[in-house]
Image (cartoon, rainbow, N blue to C red; front, side, top):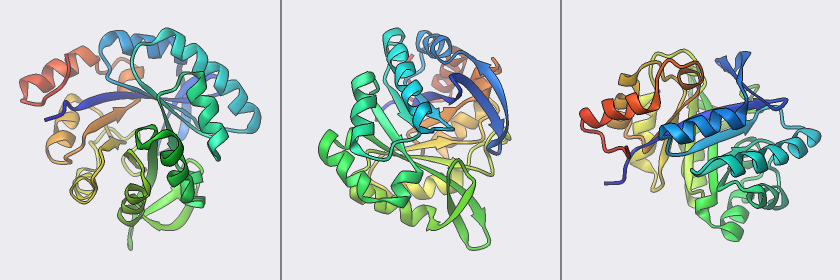
Length: 251
């Protein structure tokens, strides 16, 4: 069985790492290159960097940041934000990123998934989905959770899978930053219906939450931010705990 992955996520705004709750109330969490290097040294399996306010100038600045990250860390990392066309993907991969994450642009133009997978390979294309539970089911949102769409989580994830996405990164907006655990029921449904890995995001507050999402949520990887950024959970401690609980992780 493949090892379960631990992935710190760094949201970038104006060149700094920030973290909020339910996608709002952002506070600064440190230098993204320094944090990334620290996580790499601590044994994180991968990193995700998201430019959460990607404008044209922001993307240019972000490219320079990606080059700096690539020069300092030794583990794979994914970048997202402001990716609308193949030239954006090419620019970020050339700067040193291993994968790209697309979210709003994929919902607006689903063929972008086919194009990225066709040109660069499925392994490069992570489709991120921000969703919130409504009376009618899990609805997908655009623009960092600001705009509700007519797309539903499970249908959209299945379509992304069929179009060539390499992974699904599912963030429950209801769980984001609340630290009460991941949306394991929805994650298990995704894992049972898709043929590609599912990354859990939103809700990590203690080590048990990681164990639960791997066991009950059937997630292939668990992503978290504030518990790592603010030192509440140390990655070596987390991995030792998971290994003792019978979860296959790289130590």
